[in-house]
Length: 117
Image (cartoon, rainbow, N blue to C red):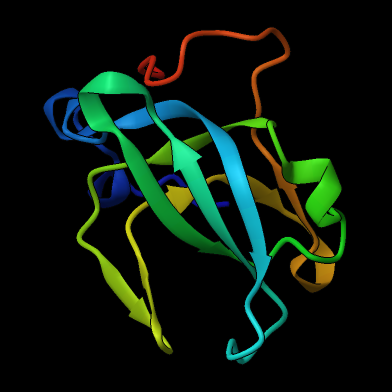
């Protein structure tokens, strides 16, 4: 990978990204999605509240695996219309071959809404 200083992120830019811990409250199939996905309802605590997201994580996770799981997400992107669903945050994960996604999580239970930084 080339080191390109034009791609370097400056600290003030990074500080604008709100990456938070949330707990998945509800998981539904997203039948209208072009690629297999779930619709997630996530609790980010009292400051941020409940947000929804669409996530293409059906290869590795069942709905039962996801319920009550704490995940990491960006909560301050603009909302994005995906079919008939409005996604309000971006759930983060590592992306392997063939879009095989492993969610970023907390290994210990922490307070919803805590900032990652």
